[in-house]
Length: 194
Image (cartoon, rainbow, N blue to C red):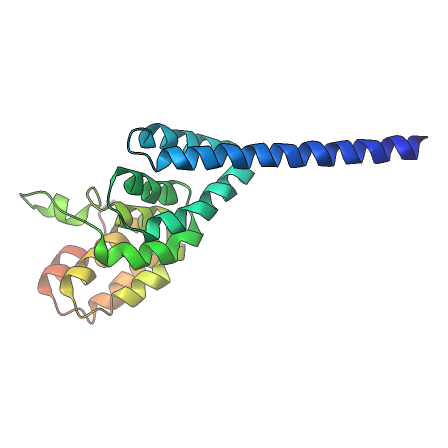
């Protein structure tokens, strides 16, 4: 009798667990549809973030969906919210998509560019997401530092400088030995002030 009760309890738990997972998946599907709608994107962003922080299964579901959205690089508010989610969730699986869109995404500084604006990621959604993901992005960023385009190198140096981890500082300092743009050396060739 006890074995039969245990077996029934196990089956019931499995059925309820499957139903809960299906419900979570349906909820995340709805939230991602709302994330893609400019009229509901901000609310959906916060709901996805909250659900992802509370439930590892929801986080995994959200992280699976983000790279395909990012690859589309639409530059609109839903896309910006999706990129921002990758940073907030530290979605390492989205690194290739973020690296792919980095050259085609905006990092527009303010009209009056001072040291503060030239060194922050305030206007660089993709750069900020890569920075928030942290050290797992460093190898891909190190490869981009080999670019012949000084604007690309400046942007990557800014990301690494703001990341400010042992790995990012090492890559940045090693690169400064080869950097040919004096402006990049001047701004990012010194350790970040704490």
